[in-house]
Image (cartoon, rainbow, N blue to C red; front, side):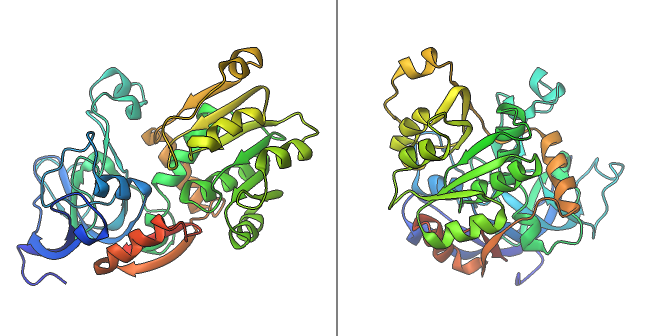
Length: 351
């Protein structure tokens, strides 16, 4: 716990680097400005974004000491000026929409806030949830999903909203379609399997261990492929009589993306939200235009899609899967779990 009323415990970084740059310290407690809400953080879930920001790159412009962490659940602790009439109350449980936008541009006002030119994520180029408290705009406070634990609630945000936009909004999945989900043990992979099941689609899941594939089957995957011991192109062709899948759920990049084009049916869609194994795959454009394959980029989702996900989660139709919960001071250990690809589902920190 914080040692006095003006400070808090947090994990911060003061430079880019490996896990060793994550430092558990006592820093100033943030104060809510006009239009802001301070949340007492009860849980914060990890994402690969945390690893990328920690490692550094030209897109990141941090104010040190910097706190990572995009997915926050907790309790409203204080209201800034102008928030008193917004229906929020101190002591209420809440989750936090990880995406920040201007709120006044055409994209924001038309319900497509994740297309805002000023869009950014908590813990990216703004302070995140790796601390006892976090301050966010009141518009980012979202309703708590049912009776979930705080770690489960934190694990219900970024990955589900990302997978929802990818499959439902972008790829336009329909009942009966065949969906190839790469990286089935990841947070977005776990969410994608469940969303595809919700829409009565058939899932082929890939992962690097048989243990993860067993868990993917338990979530509803009809077919599984160990990409380390099997050629997923050959396996998918065999499963589909060479026709290919309707949709590829892609977030791996590199050679995986290149091969995914080969297993997409004529007129099918590849939707991607990341490139954890490489940003510059070689693509034979003849496969794209001749077979009329759509390649769709996707980042996060709108606030409206997040609320739809939370409704399904509240009803138990979608379920956050947690690999491990660790105390905040073990953030470096948690990062190592993600980097070694050991997790099935989410790793969560508790301040």
